[in-house]
Image (cartoon, rainbow, N blue to C red):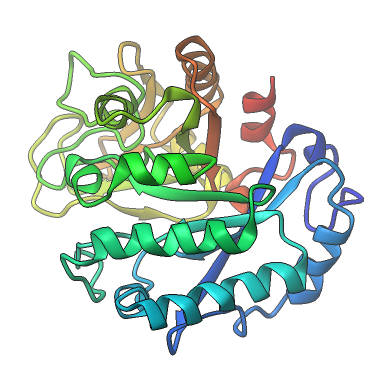
Amino acid sequence: MDRFSGLRNGDADRLTHVNFSFAVVKDGKGSVDHWFNSDVVREFVKNKGHIKAILSVGGWGAGGFSPAVSTPESREIFAQSLVDIINDYGFDGIDMDWEYPCDDVAGIEASPDDKPNFTALIQLLRDKLGKDKIISMAVGGMQRCVDNLEILKLAELMDFINIMTYDMCPWNYVSHHTSLHPSNITRNPNCHTAIGLYEAAGVPRNKLVLGAAFYARVYNDVDGLDAPTTNGPTFAGGGYTNTLKMVEAAGGLKYDEEAEAPYVYNAKERTFFTFDNPRSLKAKVAYAKSTGLAGVMFWEYTADTEDSTLLKALAE
């Protein structure tokens, strides 16, 4: 292991920021009471060197945000609890991963008032944390995610915005889940289009971070790319190591040249796997550089191989 707790050898030099996921909202306050490895987090932050250590709050299906931001009084309690955690651990900032304001798609509380209330929370956090601490947020790559945010006000308050350009695979037909460009062989939501939504809304490119995936999604009982389905994709566990096994079992990798997206179809099992690999990750880095984006982020570190195959590809 690296001298940095929890990182594989050499990976500290390949990273600029590490987000610790997740703090949750509990009884109107931020909480990390569920962390079983808080000593490892503290050790990492203590010895982090050049790396910025960020506290991530929320995640898919994590509720409590809407009531916590609903009044000036509740926002004060919520914001101060987050600041207390940041100061206690020595984090360099906070990443808000509310999925999503004004939207109950994940089965959590939501209200139309989330839109201005979220902005008010971020303003309060900025006032409390000052200019030296990082504030970022994770956002979806869909138009409704843009529409449900006061995005211009938030962009002014935040250092950067992480677009979750993964899990974009459709539910009624088979396609890529984290492709870079539109494809001529399938109808695919893609990174370029998602970036364009935020740029069109007025967010400067140098505050936008492109998302990459270290895991695969799988469609079962399907007839290949672009085929109809009623099942939708599921999460493929085992990280990239398991993805490589799926490639071998299917008889090899295929690559959508236009989309910059690798995939596998196992005709015998009728399973379709969609993911990022070193080639597609390098294409994303090149895209981020050529278009002036703030950088590339990924979900998530432990899904890489033991020798950091995917992170090395990004760093190269």
